[in-house]
Image 1 (cartoon, rainbow, N blue to C red):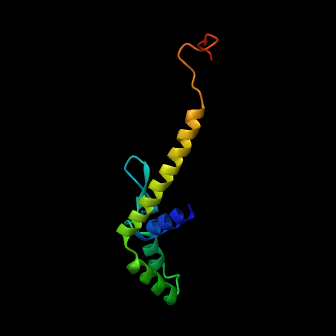
Image 2: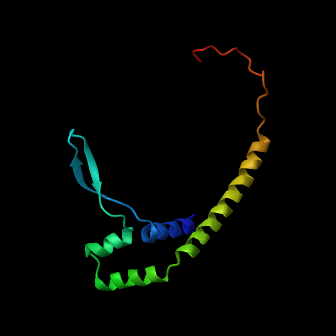
Image 3: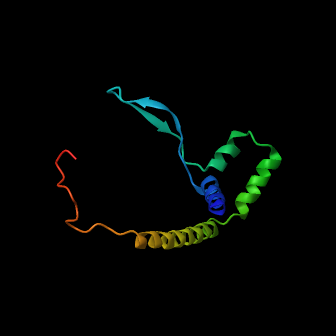
Length: 114
């Protein structure tokens, strides 16, 4: 799970564009709605803010250039498939040991209130 989280975090911060609400506007009837900025990835927002040092900005740019989004997605998919297989085996084992009620097996008639 830790490996999956670290890969998803990288994909989210480097390659997933998001919009942020930057204000409000109203129409002629007084209804207020949010105004959003252009979609940008979180790492672009941090770079544009100017709060990082030059060394850290260079390090982030190098990491961005070295990261392949297709390979990242393949790694995430592989881990997710492995987790699904593990969960399926455990679910099958638990489901096989539990007996299910048969039709007409209820002891009491259910009222509309229950």
